[in-house]
Image (cartoon, rainbow, N blue to C red; front, side, top):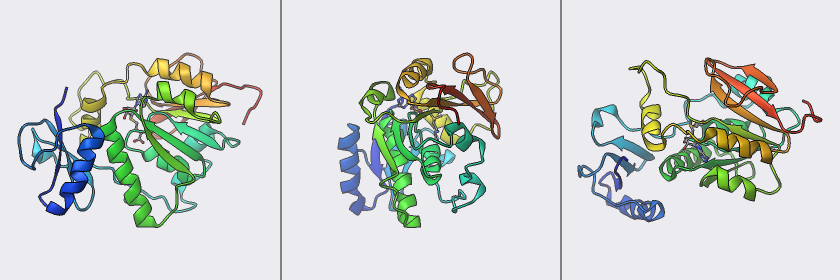
Length: 253
Ligand SMILES: C[S@@+](CC[C@H](N)C(=O)[O-])C[C@H]1O[C@@H](n2cnc3c(N)ncnc32)[C@H](O)[C@@H]1O
């Protein structure tokens, strides 16, 4: 288990925010540079970042949506692209039950779906919340009606979401590659260290199938087997595949 502390970048004005975050996440507050942790969640004037204290040369990880092309009508947000087609044209509400850093949840919200995102790692959820808040501040968009982020285990929280969502989107951790790739991005490396391999993803899929009014969409690497056999359909994206499990086969589209 990685030892994690909260710190701030030396700017005393940030001590308060760091202290609040430490209380919220029930993690110890440490001074920057104190070596007694594996990972440090650092409050800086710009953003919240995760540092690998064992290897600071790796550089920080933070949720950054500023370089993604999310302009209205751009290809990323097109309802013709595989993710939107997998979610379905009649779908209005989506739960992203494996929110991670929040990129897919943001994408879905900007496509016009009403999204509830759930992330069970409080550290990853804090990074996602920070990235989403900066995106909203930077773009001036009001997403409060369309995107909310909850921290907790979706296996327990899904039952409490009312009304039931039309679709549930799952993007559990991909099975680790047999050959270790040197090119694994630090974002993914630290994510895997914090959250593991999501071995309970099949259980989450079962619960999701019993909850979604219309469908569950599972994002998989293009060369991985489906999370459960016989998806109703599969749509190929760039390096990934979206397996769709219809839960109400009388409502196609
Ligand atoms: C591959 S990441 C998702 C990446 C995300 N789609 C994005 O755009 O950033 C998988 C995430 O799902 C979360 N997760 C897995 N099972 C979960 C569960 N039962 N409830 C909530 N979060 C879960 C993990 O903690 C991890 O952060």
